Every structure is written in structure tokens, then in C-alpha cells.
Length: 603
Image (cartoon, rainbow, N blue to C red; front, side):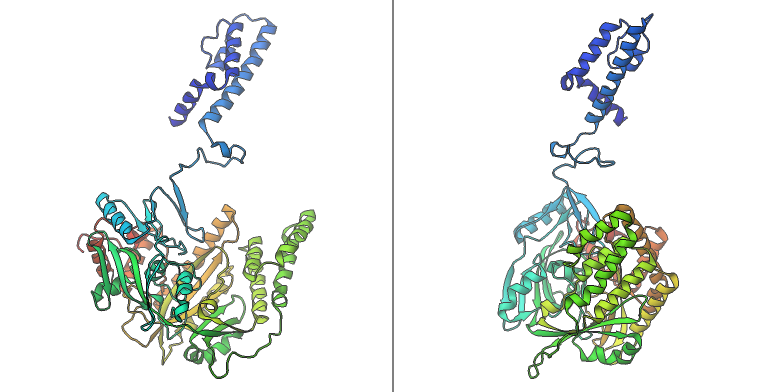
């Protein structure tokens, strides 16, 4: 019906826009007295009476001409493009340009995306309070979203979002107590740069520094170190702007029950406006990177956990290589270690470059292959290891044998990259995660600091065996980190015992291409990989996914099972009760939150 109306609307304006069409129709009418409807040319040109052969030919060609022009005009006016897009290649299914007020918001990995007309960025607390109050009165959604770095897009909502990027100030620094009060929209790196002149910094860091403080706290993000808790434990007080109770301040002393619930509140209990953080002295760290194997790791695991402030393992599937990265304060007496690396950076990465050239020849045949290798030579020498890995995987990301070759090249790269690095904690504790990717990260108990259970290594052994048995094209790394417990009740590392430690294990599949078909195939393979891991390991080891990486199942039975599983680990009823009290109209919620924590009338 809509198509018919569009065509009709286009035809009515043809005389105005295309006078040549009107002339053809007039000429056709003059040639044949039977042409009564100039906008039904095919029928008119096929019903003339007793024509001469020359008249018939003329009418036939005029009819074809008019038909072609009419079809072209109908198509043109039914599928308009903006003036600046007329030179661009047509896109399938894009019938009209998007409205100017429609914002497209996606997460960093490009795995989740929404379009919304309501994307709010208040500049101060007063504007935020007015926005929350007005939205609650109108029952309009304003889901809190941070920097969009969560792999699962937990902050996205089509109905509307609020982002605090413009509320990014350091409000107060207490140098003596080593505390800092900030607006929640400040980015981690921005905060660290702003307080280093006071000689303080954050206790721990996640892999990257672009997160907003409000977001990194609300999802329960973490760094690594068996004696160091997740980042939410650094929060000692918060200011929440809630739909029903306005702005409230909570801390360990003031409403502690809500405070411990809201620290990892997933943006569902209020918009975090301000945060007070307990910091530590700024210090230089020495990072030591070396290659080990599973036998040596088992022998030294307890020692590595207890003697290093920060430690993580990077496992490389289909190899026995384990990259160990430790970070500790520089010794005041000995100073940084004196170490001369065996290989230069170019020598360490050359093996990967060679594999890339070799793979290009294999996957690009004939003249194009030689041309591609030559054209890419300059660029490849400027690429980092992770960029080269992306290019390699893009050639054949789901071919197990190809992925194994890339993994072996990665193991060789790390072997030649062994050594030490010295820098400030915010410089050293980061990690180049690579390009766009799918990630699933689980957290599970690993005993106590004084007596590790070794379950963390058993988990990895079973996971690596699963990969090989199922022939999963799993790229590197499988990353394993540790934290101490968190007192935040919604944290995956929540525990009442101070000595408990938790292991965090991340599996990954990269999305090194923008080709839609290839990305779809990688996505399907990743979720197969994740499903096998879940089936074999999660219940056995009491593992639960990181809130920024948990995905909502499409299958109803799987969703019901996940909801029941979450209830066994987290205080879901208490969380939902607080949601109902603080956000009765659910303006801070989104589809993901509603599916994970459905509200019942009984609460």
C-alpha cells in the first residue's frame, strides 16, 4: 500500500519536475486519439485503432520511451537521497536518509548498536537532577551510558540515554587522606593525570584507560593482583541522582546496605553523579614479561600469586606457551633491574611480518597477490603486533590451521619480547587488547590468599583441552587475572571472607573485518565457543560472567536458566526491591537489565 502511494505521489509531480515527460505524453496524445490517460502509457500505446505501419512504429517507440522515463521518475521520487549523497554508491534497503535528530550509538567493539532520538549530556549536577526529575514525570527512558567500552553494550537503550562526558571535573583532593572526589563522567586517564601532582593515583587499573569512572565502577571492573580488590572497592562514597528520591549520598557509614548494593548497581539504581575514591601513593613499577609452560606454572603458581603485587597469565591455544607478566614497585635499594634484551623490537616482530607476507601470497593469487604484498610492505613495518595479528586473522579467521599458525607466531613474538619495563603504574598496568572483538570473561573462587585452591589452573587445563577436542579456531590470548574479594554484593567477586581470592578468565574472538557476512560467521563461532565453555565449566567452577560481558540468551529456556543461576549467586530480590523504590518507572533500565532481573509484583 505504501509503495503504491509513493508511486502515485511521484506521478502527480512529473509535469512539474520533468517537462520532457509531459511533452512525450502530449505527443503521444496527438498521435493517437485513443490515448485518454497519459499516465497509463503502456495500455494506451497498445490499443490504437487501424494504424498505419509507420504510425504504429512511432507510437511503439514513443511508448517505450515514456515507459522508461516514467519508471525512472517513479524510482527516483520514491527513493530520495540527500543532495550530498547522490554521488555515493547505492546501499541496499536504505530507502531514505536518517533524520538529523537520530543518533546512532554503538559500543567500541561494534557488536551492539542502537539508534535513539534522546541522547542527553548534562553539564552539571543541576542539569542532571532536572533531567532525571522531568524524565521520571514523563516516564521517559534515560539509561546511563559511559564511554561505550562494554563488550555487551550494557548501557545502550533505544528509548533514550544519559551520558556524563561533560561532567568530568575533579572536585576535591585530600592529599593527607589520599582521597579524591570527582564527577562520574571523568575518564580514568584524565583522573590519573589530574591527581599525579598530588603524588597519588588509583590502586589498580583495568586494561584500558578510556572508561568513565561511573561506568567502570558500576559494572564491577577489575585489574589484577591477588591482594588487590576490584575497582569498586576503591569507592568510599557516592552521590546518586534517583528518579524517586532525588539526589542521595551513600557511603560505608551512611546507608551502608544500599551503598554496598549500589556500588556495582549496573546503572539501575540511580545515575552516579559523583564518586569519592580512596587512592594510594603514586609509584613506579617494574614489569617483567617472560615465557613459561604449564608444568612450570603449576610448580610456581602459589609463589607467583603471593610474591607479586600484580600478575597475569596469557595462554596461547594449541601451544604449551604461557606468557607471564608480573608488576612490582621498583626497589628503593636496588633500583630498576639492569637488563639488555636479546632481541630488538623489530627482531621480535619480524616472524609475524614474515607470516603475514607468506599468508598474503597464499590467500591472494596471481598478479593481485604480488601487488598486495608490495603495497602492504611499507604499512606492515609500521604496524604493532596486535595490528598485524588482526590483519593475519582477517585473511581466514575461522580456519583452525591458519589460526594455529598465527598463535605460534604470537608465542614466538612473546619469546623474543621477554624482558623488563619500568614506568608509573598507570603506564605499566595497561594492556593492548587488540581490535574489535567478542569477549566472554568469567569470575570464580580460587581459594584463599594463604591457600590457593589451584582450581584456577584446572579451569584453564580443561578449557584448553576443550578447544583442541572441539577444534575451535581460538585465537590468543586466553587471559587469566586475579583479585581479592569485593564487599559489593553485586560484584562477581563478592565475598564475606577477607582472605578469598578470585580468578578472572577471558576468552576472545576478534572481528578484524568490516565484512558483514564474515563478522556474522565469527559471531556464530564465538557463541558456539562460549556455549561449550559454559556447559563444561561454569557450574563446575561456580563461574559467573563479568557484568560488562554477559549476553542475554535469545532462547527462552536458556534465559530462564540464566535468571535462576543469577539468583543463586547474587541478592536479586534485594536489588530489584531497591530498583522499585528508587526507579519505580524503570526509566534507568534497558532490555538487558529487564531480561536479567525481571521485576515481579511480589517484591
